[in-house]
Image (tube, rainbow, N blue to C red; front, side, top):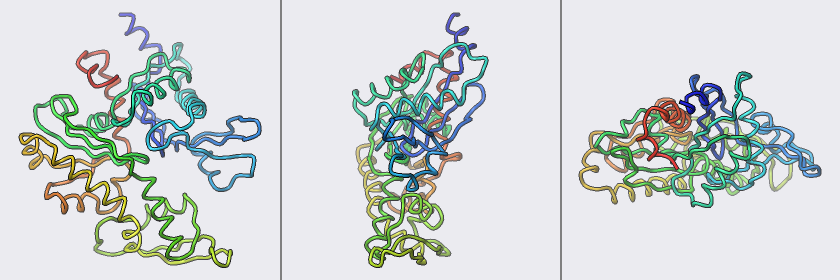
Length: 342
């Protein structure tokens, strides 16, 4: 009874605390916040100047006394204090005035992180003002968010390609039969593009430009109509600004190594899958989620490599946050959900 009273007066949250972006689900309302996981800090005073979208606009454009940092790397906390400040900022931004109690928070975390790294996430959220903190494995959260029937006695496979990690899991009867976390994902795509421009064109581009190239002309499988775009940067030979035309075929070549790593990891996971569950995947296929799954041709490439149907989830960017939120909505109703979190 007291739990129900507490939940009525607090703004309970589901959170996808991602390397690239943070999404927050407010109980009873859905996802109400999507912002980059970036914090601008004054290096002299150590004061946090801005968080989220405003901080990301500063990347590559700050004076010497200000740095724009991403406090999470490869899905885990790299800077404890800055992460705490970022979570506190997001909690304040979504909290309602009627909230008298600190919120309960369900946070999606990579399945492959250590107990020490899990404890760091939990302690950061508690220090930021959470009353209770529950951690749920990201592939499970993504599966719930994508409406996969996780409690059925049939095998389902999800591949969640985020910013810092790619999460793979075979799910059946409400549990992770096989789960693995590969620290190759969207950030590595950006870095591969950046390095390609440096090596082939002697052109230095920034992280934001590399991300734009990935979004606008990026692909991992041949397109019916190839794309082109203009890219601006600094010529490493002359030191002067320079503009070049880039084709989608070139970006596909640039992305080759990290994409191959993900495909090989998917194949390795399938090789470990029990026979009965493997048979289920012939009909159910592989579901892709996360921002990386939005790269053109990813589902086609996986189908070509595995001979299994592959699909990109609806609301693919939101799956982990939606799953954490759905877990939160049902947490008071079903004790069975407790096995899904830590």
